[in-house]
Image (cartoon, rainbow, N blue to C red; front, top):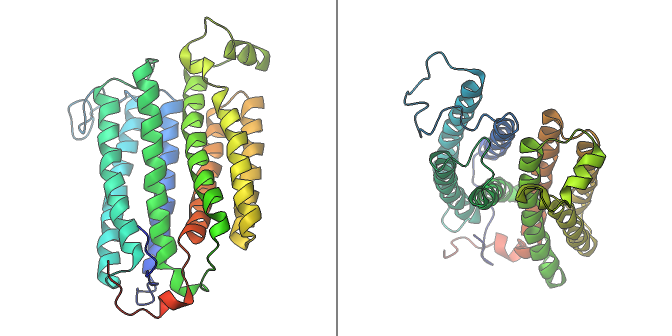
Length: 316
């Protein structure tokens, strides 16, 4: 999605950039509603039918779980329309070679895989109270794909708006920290999704009970894997702070602030024994942090130079 000769989308409509960020925001809402589906055990609300809901286009006399799951499916339908509109508008409003086009295409690819993975979860029965190893794998893969979709949308919006920002300065010293920060954060997110699933399926009555079950030999795999999330968070934080220290920019400070907020929300989530509303707030913070980190990493790995701005017809 990147090229040294990339040019800013100065010719894009003024409304395109706000629209692109609105698409990012809407998809965050879709992700949050997906967390509600998981936390309320509504994943099987539409049965094992996909894309239909219990065999119907519109469910009749639905129960609460059905309404929650059906609302999530409809929200993804709206997201699909918005993303397709973003891709079409981006190609219409920008010139050949603008890297926002590549990010937009990537978002379409991840949108398709997101839908396919969602279908696999439903048709394979990896929902509700399923605690199989296959569900652990599918949950991790699905959440990773969700992060990549959100990253692609964020980069589309970020690169569409780069004509309104000063050219960034390349720094080869931060290349490794940038990649490590992104990879570590993906691992952090994937393990976090498993920890949230474990908290939903196996709620604890107290902190002592929760900590004891984490290391009990008879505990289910999901419970015994729960420690991986805080461990990944510590490693990921070190990588991100390394990147922030190397870059030293306003965006870097925003990333650091969001990272600190995430730790506070994570601690609060544990102390409150992971109520649904706190899980959603924690995930919201994670999504905002991820969007900011992706933009920071992009500025570090693929900086836009003043020379690139003067290129009229770059080659894809």
